[in-house]
Amino acid sequence: MSQQFDAVDVIGTKRDRGALSTAQIRWVIEAFTDGRVAEEQMSALLMAILLNGMERREIADWTKAMIDSGERLDFSSLDRPTADKHSTGGVGDKITLPLAPLVAACGVAVPQLSGRGLGHTGGTLDKLESIPGWQAELSNEAMMQQLNEVGAVVCAAGAGLAVADKKLYHCVM
Image (cartoon, rainbow, N blue to C red; front, side, top):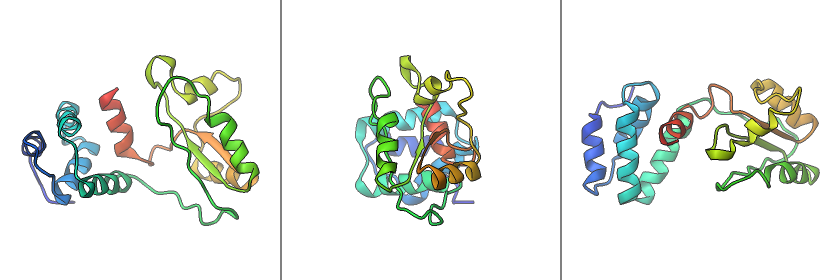
């Protein structure tokens, strides 16, 4: 377990335009993920970050802490390189469905983890689940099998992946 901090002090640091230490960032992500920091507190911290920004080091530390909050997938067993296509937001799902198979046809694996309940139009998964028989929830093994066989997959992140990300997204939506 990382060093202990107080959520109010961490929020205050950012509110007062200070830089969060690596230890503070690791602690707040871990504590939020396991329920020791409330959604209201994390929302206040996120608002302070939005208003006051983060230094490059803080962004790198935050990203690493988010990654470390869950399991990681290892794509080294694939016989091709991998590429990620991440949404920049906006209405509609106009890019994922044509781009993932196009990139896969060029010999690059595309493990596309998509979202749900994103704004008023829903997420990519919400729309795809309206297709009879289509499944968003795949095991890591099934996802890897599809990447090996087809070269692309669009699915939900497993329960152990990006745990902090899921909680943070819920906090701001």
